[in-house]
Structures are given as C-alpha cells and as structure tokens.
Length: 258
View 1 (cartoon, rainbow, N blue to C red):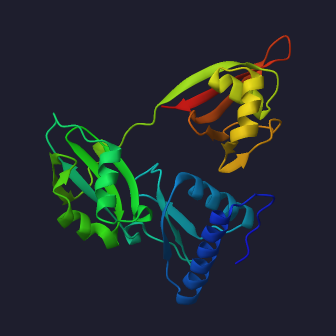
View 2: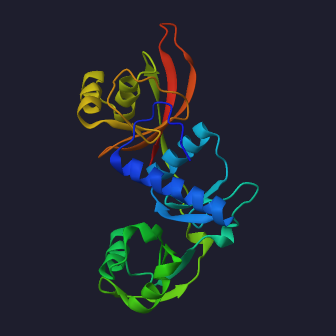
View 3: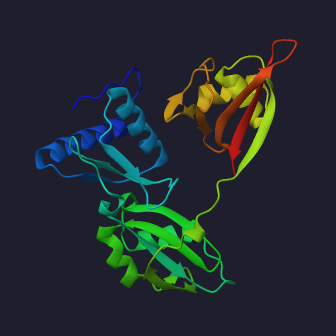
C-alpha cells in the first residue's frame, strides 16, 4: 500500500515503521485476519493516524489496554472486517506492595529491562499507591510473572490483572493570554512565559514537535487543538481562541499537561 503523505516529513525511523505497517496491511488482506504491531509511542501513533487519514484508510484500531493509553498497539484488518479489543496480543500485569513503599515508573522499567525485555513489548506503566500496573505484549508475560520478585529493593507480588481505579486522571494547567498572531513562536512564548526572541531561538535550535511533526519554522501557523511539545519543557495543547482585544491581539488558552 502507498501512503499519501501530503508534505509530511519522515525520519528514517518513520519510514521503517511505515514499511512495516504496509507489510502488515498486505498480510492482513492476504490472510484475511488482523495483524498487529508492537507497542507504538504517542508520536508514532499520531503519525500513523495522520497518514491513514490522509490516505483514506480506516481498517485499523489503536489500543493500549485502556482508554487514553499513551503507548498503543496498532491492529490493521482486511476490508469489511474489524479487530476486537480481546484480539490484541497484550496483557496487564499488576505489582502489589506495601502502601508505605515507593516504586517509580523508572524502577519498574528497569526491572523489565533487566529481564532483557525489549521496550517495544512494554506499554503504559501506571504507578499507584501499593499497586502498579504494566501492559505487556503477551509473548513476555511469563517472563515477568515468574521473573520478578523485587523491584529495586522492594518485594512485590506479581499477578495478571488490571484494576481500572489505578488509571490516572489527565491533569492540565491552563495558560491564558494574548498574542500578536497564531505563529508558533507566539504560542511558545506564552506557553513558556519567555520572550518571542527566546522562543524563536528555541524553535530554530531544538525544534518543536507539532502534531507528531518536528517544526523549525518560527512562522508555522498553529490551529486550535494542535498539540505541541519541546524537549525539557513539557507538552501542551492549543486549547482555544477566545476572541480579540481592541488592539487586535488574540486571546487564547493553552493547556499544559502536568
């Protein structure tokens, strides 16, 4: 299958991903059964969705074990078919421990890597009080169930399950203000509370990821609901345009993920 990119710039890693996805689409049509990738990160999921939308391809599902998961598996299906969520090759594993003990996302990921488990087989890691959950490709479930007794120095019980109460609520900090235009440097200046000059230098030097594409142009025109992030400063969404001032400045709201 050939994808319509409509000017989307791809890295070599992106091209490798899309070639793999195209192969799976071919196999799904040939064998008339859904085919699955490993876990994709947020950017990869957004990139695939954008390209599928451009190409008019809708025989796919992205799922990471629960609604709003960050890391997801892509299922592609043959025409006039679909993938049930129960078909996805993923399982949830729970680590339970004393409430007084503290375990971090990094601790859990480190324990998984120590078992030589590849990152692409690991989905979201949800850390809670006395209990944490990790979503895994089903091929590595037994390695985790029988291979982990401690995370760091903390003893844990490991079992296959998922308690939805552990899902964190997405939280945002609202940033409101006025800007001269909808250019990327203007929005970044407001989001980071820095001058436009400093914002422009950050864009030119580091780039800003907007809707999964890296932008180095300070004059890139932003639109409502665009997501953007810059390494070391966080992730944001251009939430809304709220009118204009008497001096024709634009009132906007940006939400920062916290």
